[in-house]
Length: 585
Ligand code: FSO
Ligand code: SF4
Picture 1: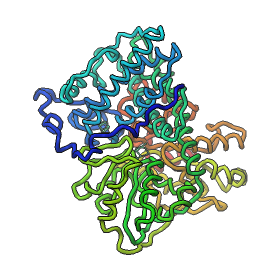
Picture 2: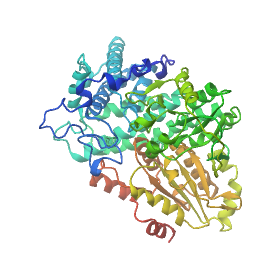
Picture 3: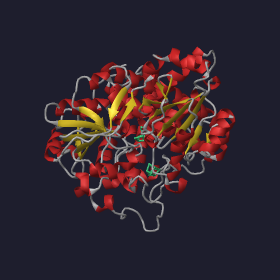
Picture 4: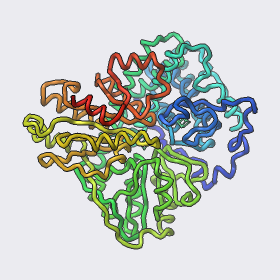
């Protein structure tokens, strides 16, 4: 494979140049004028759990995505299918292009829920996408290869204006292929959303220089397959499971990147209180950007706090040891940011999803980096954090120390397996009766309180592994310990599902069984497409009896759900009490 030629960080967003993008938007981008009054369905998106009415967002996204941005995202995905068809042909003649591979992942990532809301960013991505496609087609032809597909994703030309691209993009909505069998469409969308999640992890891992040609090959083959009208349901089911397999590898690479850079996570106490002084809050998943913030803010009287999915970063020894101003954790999960960011007395950096449209009260304090973006916010990169630091110094910070409890994080697979003998002995002598993995995403719905209640009701002789932002439903709970092992173990971010799998596989080995033979239950909460990819990884591993909630994906038809129920006994969550009774007998 060719060496990396570009970094996604080289891409300068228009908002980076100091333009408040929202102020520049023509009315077509901010109002409803782009669409005929009779057109009630201005968009269609059902990729996440909070989709309107459990069916689909058709007028505006519950997440705030506008019909214009939805059209641009759909259009971008379509052009990426063109790149993918060309990339599949290119590999047949020995060409794999690093720039195209990385671009595909970064562009896919920008279409995940709560990532990129800036239409101008999609204009740039579309132009880059079509340029890369054309370059790839030329290279295939020059190498004697052939591209036989008749998909217009290979030939379409972009309209010259953003307004034109929005209109053009309307043709490529999720429901745009007429007369397609609903089960086939369901599987195509399952594949698309899984690839989106996998692409996000692949993009993060590539930042660390951790890449695998096999994953890029799959992403292109999978996206190209969605344009292939000859495939049947079995072929798509196979690709969905392969997506799960490749996603495990993507998460492994990210885990490797993080621990190579910052050490293997170790159990670490994280204060929930605050220190007197100026303050910066870092949210999202990107540890490289967090490190850059720590470097840029050192020696300036600023304390750095984590928010949301950034909590497990405290467990990485090389971050904790090097930066004494890396203090504690503030707030909970993404859906509470409007309330929590408004009260934070410092500057805030969002390094990945999930961003929400900011309130005026804290808009000037909020910055974005990486793939995430929002019109009107200043986008930064790790080499240019000046505006974040300046804003933190302008804002009051905390006037005095305030104590609160401490919580524990840093229970990656190496830390947990370091006490494997104690765990095995505990299971053998009956002091540990069951393991639960209660993890995944948090979200707005009240029905997510199931996860809090579930954890509260688990028996005292059970261990709870948790990961991702779903942990904020119970992260302050004091569950005690079993023979010195805390009952609540924070394995990490959503991508650390890889670590949880390592723990499960090692325990299965110790007990001479498989993961399904362990006293281990998976209680998963999903929200966006990374969680979708993780679910496929668990299915690929053959894990059965997964309890999934708070609702099932709208993009899975009853027939496809039946297949998952029949083969994996995938179960929607019921009541905490009822499910626990069923599980424990
Ligand atoms: Fe949460 Fe958002 Fe980590 Fe997701 S912050 S919901 S699965 O983006 O990535 O768990
Ligand atoms: Fe609706 Fe979710 Fe799509 Fe946003 S990402 S438009 S909330 S389905």
